[in-house]
Length: 131
Image 1 (cartoon, rainbow, N blue to C red):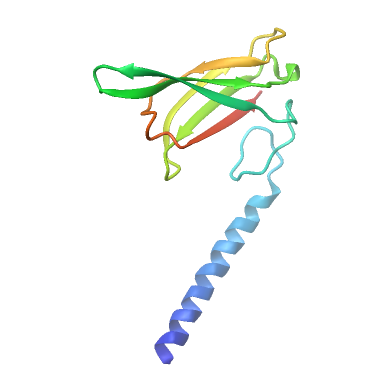
Image 2 (image 1 turned 90 degrees about the vertical axis):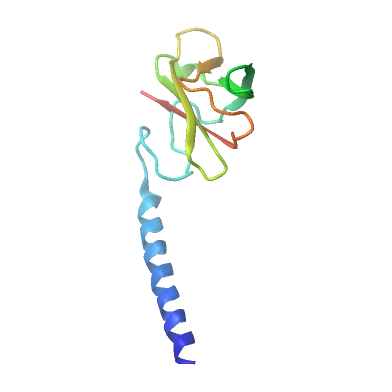
């Protein structure tokens, strides 16, 4: 019984600490950096969509993501930087790329990746538009 109470108390302490740290992230207001999945007011308020382009790598013998097309980018974002990050199932970044959004009527932009990750391992995509 004593061990159960000690384990419960330790778990409660850890939970309280994690909750307090998470609560401190709730006030993100900058449009440049974020530490959670909260939408931050920016030049594009209705969101974007993404699509992957893949190619077979004969050296690695696998399909790799070579670029990510980000569509639905608002014209108010022209001149800003479009950043794309691909992650694996654990959230670790496995590929990324950036593109200066040109001043044009185009709302769809292909971002080439500096390192082409395995298409099989790619689980998530994160898009950031910053000035």
